[in-house]
Length: 292
Image (cartoon, rainbow, N blue to C red; front, side, top):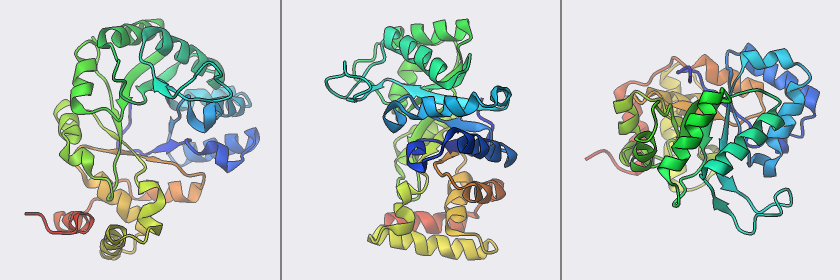
């Protein structure tokens, strides 16, 4: 399962990197050399292109698969030229679709198992019994080793978990100093109660943390700069990650970058924690006021 406090490397924007297979293989080896083996993908990433591109790279060195912990996701159906049967974007957590999606991901990734499968988005029509049946069958077949969810509310998480004979191992949600909802909507409380490490996508708020001219972003940057200086000259992104890692829910940040130097900086501070005053200074900046 997830090896906290190790961050994960995300491939959401892989198609924008313009990497050919050898270069992607080199990037993957570089990530492994930095001590990260968790790679985060999804069937729909890159308009259904990320999985096959990654699989093509892995085919150049099949033995590398044994060193990787691969996460992929399913249930979003995009309107795409690659899926002409989809007339409207929607979600599908039926047993048939989950099973078919996993079989396709296995083919595209050129592997015999998925280490962790996530339901990508909550499906209002999810029949928890049917979704659980798919999970159980996939686990029994050895095609998927662990299961989790993404963007689920605590009640949605509890519903699916109540139908399973094994635990869900994560809830991947958006979390950053500019996106605080998981701390207040019960998500992180639930994760602590269950001793489940949540994953945080977009830990830098899609880059707005560094580039947005809005008042909140400016306040948070100023607070993070002060913290970074107090911690011995961290960079802004390191201070933001340290703020996330300080939360006791034991959050696993997903780093969506092609730059190995940025991943190296994240690895350098994975054991760094803020003091309470430092952590609350960033929170106050994000909220625009001190805590009550």
